[in-house]
Length: 369
Image (tube, rainbow, N blue to C red):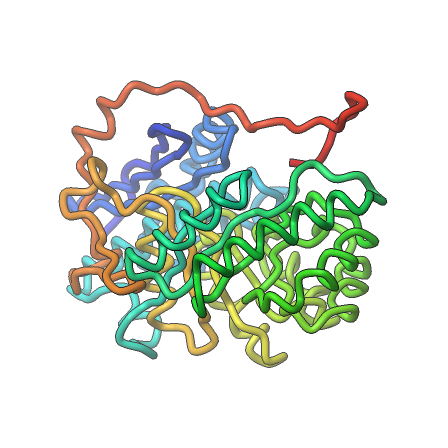
């Protein structure tokens, strides 16, 4: 079997799907979404096609190394997201070749179901309380939201009080359900440490990206200041990007995104590195259903998996959407990624590129989003 074609195309609202065709009629699907940069990803995948066409799709590790190491430049969001989508598609093909779901080829099932968390939120505490209650009513045992707005490097008491009120409202609505707090990298260490101190009595499940990921020592400062587990990783790429965080044990939970960090092949390696340091894996995935399907196969086959974020379940995109029941996501036990993309439907969808929101401080200066 040989690869005959590799292409990527944008899918609303902000995703990029990748399709790999072969000369035996078996095709694989992946997702190389990089939010706000769809045209860039389409071009990046077309460049990878030069490496892939004519090759055996079952040589997944060889092709991963070829895509990663063949060019002078490595890593980063654009190249790694393109590579990630192709990697998912290769596992989809390989599973279909063998007549087995991908998780069985990745070592088999470590668990029978995959826990996911819901999304809650809002600006007003009353709105957040009802949103959290609704998550519980839908069967979720965990949820996540962002309790902070644009924040200065050192900020005042009003920021602490507003975040405390929002999280307290979420706790009231959620009861004993787990609540993850996504700081979104908006916070500098002094405020992150103060917020963690204020929020500890409300027992958050974790704090995600309390600071930007480029300074691991700053992340470590926050981690050492609180008993709340720290999570990070959605903007790290490949095992080399995660190495320092893992070696310094700067977080308790790693959140690689399979559509950015290197696909199934690489994130399995990141998970193994993390496991040696007693770190859990909670993959980032507020994206499309192809990426989510890959995450589910990862979760089923990975011992230190913790919980899964999820975006679209695929209604209108997949012929049989994924399902969530009692806070767990389920896939059919079909070969490959166990999904069937409705290709005619997704190619016909009108496309308008998604623009990343921008935040500003009160004085007009740019804030981290």
